[in-house]
Image (cartoon, rainbow, N blue to C red):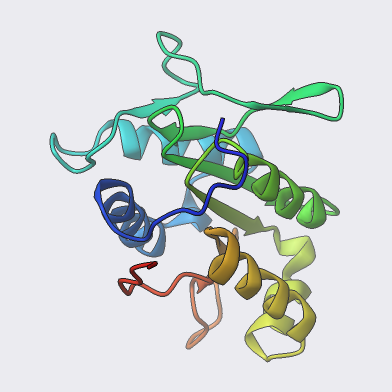
Length: 186
């Protein structure tokens, strides 16, 4: 277990974070499901069906039962991300935000950093909660933005917020708290 070991932003896992960034920002989440399990299975299938050599690490999902996704034991129970790249490389958590769950997802991402070098949170906003997404785009969610940027800058927890519904013309299809640049820690 890593226990918040400082994750270096270079090497094969960092390269895989960039690959995941490209996949997430292109992925059509609004067409892939109606519940969290559908979104998880759809994105996991995309990772599993990626071309040979797309990732430097082994893709581990809950779809493929031959290898278990490693979790973190905390608060008296095991918390397991939806998928990972290697046993301690990158955790990927997908949350469908209908009524609640935003705070839980952020907390889960923080806990996953105990084991994994990098954590990717994909928060899919339901149409019922589209006000959150619209407020974020309009800059009305500055405290949330600061929190997610802090997690990205200091904890290697990168968050993507995407709508589960069709957007109006001109709206961003993904709000990302990942800046694809090389930062080499000294």
